[in-house]
Structure formats: structure tokens, C-alpha cells
Length: 204
Image (cartoon, rainbow, N blue to C red; front, top):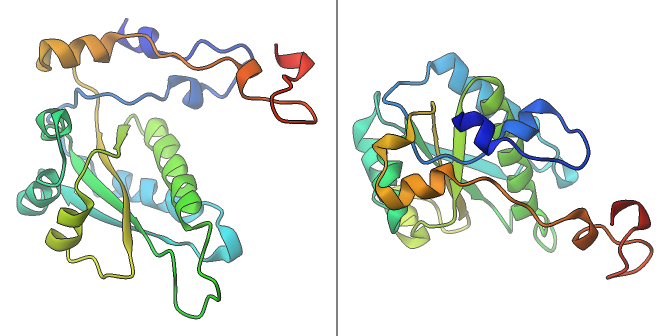
């Protein structure tokens, strides 16, 4: 029932992994095998990037294998993210390099490309029976300090990865959000025809 509630209700058919992808907060107390976790990073590694610069790096903490590293990343999370993030199997911070050496004018697509890598990562996670919840709610300055991220690199996003657990482990407020159906703006507000603001006639 829980999975059905969160499955995307689409106007047009999409890949099952995309329809099933969502961002839970209830994670099971279960380690992720090394080869399975490796496949997620492999998927991210093969994401497209501008000029093939591949401007992504990942700092991770595995709760079952490296509790100290996990605790460092957990301490960078803010608000409610910390309360449920502590149950994830892995915490991650994705980092990019906006102005790499020997790239004139910098890499204006660095953040976009990290987003593509994370999208690949999240869909590979779904194919492995894992879920990922990406978060903007973390302290970048603290992450830079605790994880010793060099000055020329920028922390972009944090993420919790793990296997799905019953939402009963969450607080009442978080459980309500966990069980709420997903929603998206209609295509008529997102797809324009020929000029800005003119909805495409096929998608109204």
C-alpha cells in the first residue's frame, strides 16, 4: 500500500523506475553491500557532462562500516533532516568544481552536471531496491570544514540512501508527510509552444 500511494500518477506512460522513484524518510537498519553501492556511483560516473569535465565528487559516510564518518556528515544536516537522516545506511555530500584550472571562464554547467549525475545515481538506486532522499538542508560551511573540502570545490547537495522501512518509525509529523501522495504541476504549466507562456496544444 505504501509504494502504491507514492507511485507517480502520470498523464503519459513513463519508465517504471521513474514512476516509482520518490524520496522517503523512513530507512531500514540495513547495510548496503559494497558492490551494490558501487553500482550507484558507477551510474553517476557515466552521466553526461559539458565538455566531459565530469565535475562531480562524492564524500560518503556508511553508518554500519564507518560510524565516525557517518556522524560527521550527519552533523552537517539541519532541522528535521537530522532526525530521520540518522537512520539512513549512507549519507552523502556531492561536491563540484565551478572554476577548474585550465578551463577558461570556468565551468558554467558544473552544478547542472552534478544534478545529472545525481539523477543517474537515484535511478540506479531504485533498480537496486534502494531509495535516496536528496537534501538542500545542510550546512555547507560545516561540511567544508569537517570533510576537509578544498576551497575551489563547492558542496552542492546532501543525500540519504538506504532501504525502505515502515513509516511507523517516524514522528507523527514526518509520518504524515511520508504517506502523503506525490504531486506535480501539470504539463500545461511547464511545456510551452514556440514562445514563453504559450502552453503547447498537445499538453493542456
